[in-house]
Amino acid sequence: TENLATATDAATAAAVSVTEAMRTAHGLSLIHISYSGGIFTNEGASGAAVFALGAAVVGVELTFVVMAAQELRIDPSGTETIALPSSGAQGAAGKYLTADAVGEWVKLLCVKTGQWHVAGYAGTWAHEAG
Image (cartoon, rainbow, N blue to C red; front, side, top):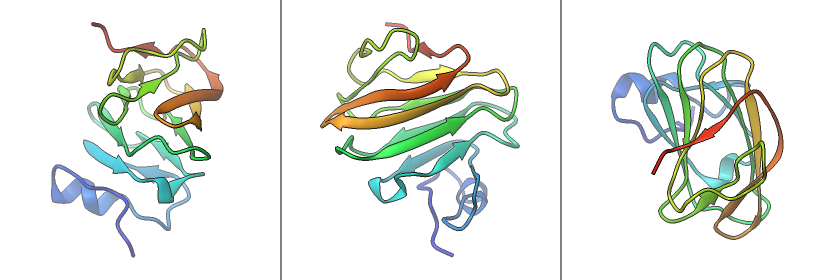
């Protein structure tokens, strides 16, 4: 099975595969544009699950779901931005989006190169401070 993640450890890399309907990661996973339409969760995490996004390319759509009461962090590539779900305002360059309550979800869609927009969400999502 092709591996989805570029992970910080072998256990994380082994936990994520292209064939899973709900992809699970513990630690750092790099999400490439080829996974557009995918659903990413923190199911089974015992700490923060960090998903590093590849380049924001027009047409890419990614959904993230908090399934464990642990932080799920979405980290944009370089100086790219992610909109805050509650307002639609783009966050600061390179700042992550985070949530930690079971059932929270966000669907990100790139409609402008370098920017992730929110196509839908539930719960309370926050931007990285600073």
